[in-house]
Image (cartoon, rainbow, N blue to C red; front, side, top):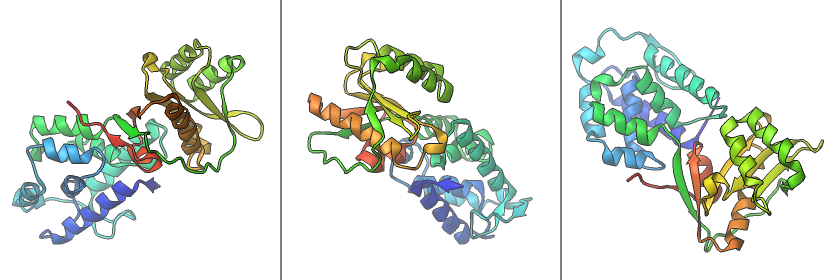
Length: 280
């Protein structure tokens, strides 16, 4: 199982929290505490807007009631003993990841699992639970500035600007591999004389990925949607598609690009220095 760097840090910090507790057992609450220590991505905004902090949560961990009747287990994901609830949290999180056809487990999957499994209900008010669910477990809009952006050398060479005679092939590919909604967005994009879309092809000239900008509800400076077939991910294809679009956007004169509804936040942070746009 692959995990993002941010989730890996959270897991290691959760271990440290467990080791400092009375019985040295990692519990779901330790994962939540570790999330509050993580200030990158969307979690900085979560910790800022929640009326909780790591210190208050840590004090509750030592409560006698919470430490009783815990079933202990071992997990290859951790270097300390864990409760069976922690194993369940990760099983549910992996299921969420698979449901979205993603390949990296991230902090949003784990937070969503923590809330869904009700293992942290006694520590959270409805307000705090809503903040975590809204800001920490959902796709977020991001922004990357293009004015002084230095474009990298692209290794994958199978990316091409889409042509009008590829409309049916691309629309069917997107609907089959992603969603009907995305396919209709792409279909609308072909109404332009010069569609702002790219496709990635394999050696057999089959579509294995796509990316677009300025096509979602005709919003300008708006990148997305983008998708790569699951067997072809983690091979630089998405990175290449992204940068072909961003380069066009810069040449148009855009000073920034909005990445709409970014699910894999950490990908865009690393790929193009994008940052999460704070909620209102």
